[in-house]
Length: 299
Image 1 (cartoon, one colour):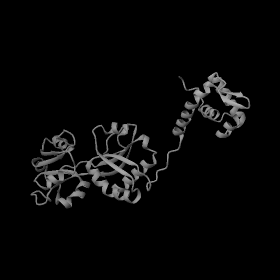
Image 2 (image 1 turned 120 degrees about the vertical axis):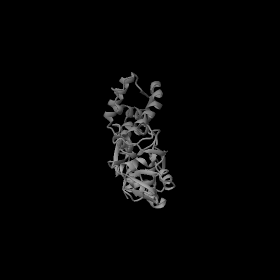
Image 3 (image 1 turned 90 degrees about the horizontal axis):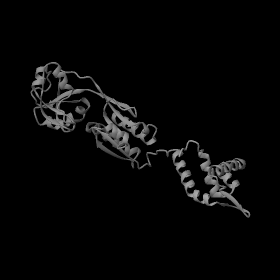
Image 4 (image 1 turned 120 degrees about the horizontal axis):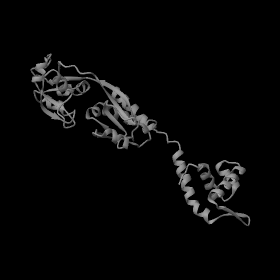
């Protein structure tokens, strides 16, 4: 059935007429003049090829066709109200909303301590569910598996939106007391050392390895781990080198007694972002969450 020719105002008028069984009361119910409601009734009678309301004595009664339409008309009006109703305002102090966030574990470390403090103060009943970042995160985000993705910036689909959180750079660290601690490494020293690599996937290569290959060098990857927060602990207990984001070094180096070394390769700074689906752009709760994350990570 082609719905293009149906006036939704007629659906509202139909529901009012069938419910009130009186043109005057139906007009008052929906805020129309009596003549306008009479005109709507005439159009409805023509559409359904049925009188819908007939006079019996001093009352108007429903025809059998109108009786059959009473339930569907009520459901249709209810559906229209749900479609066009204004969204409820988001009140952080009283909301019990649950937000799902997919993130790399280092972003969780940067964001969660301060974000938890913000929630405790501003939104005590809002819950967060952090998930590991899946390979198909763009599809999962569009599908609604989670509301927000935190991580390194990559080209995104047209249906997604993003915002820069901060920029970071890779630096090299070793355990305290390591023979290379505090030194400036040559390319050959860097390539000759054993390394820990963070790689969530199966590939045991990174941008560093590509830069070394361009210079005809190859480093030894002694250990590959899948999580950012595991690698510093491995390096703290070994003689391996680790090249990681500077912000992660700031977070863990004091506790693990890690020291920096000056690596011979300089990589470009990269951007960390939060990404969300276009449908969440104007959602008041989602806007509050994005703002809270900006404050947490930027603090």
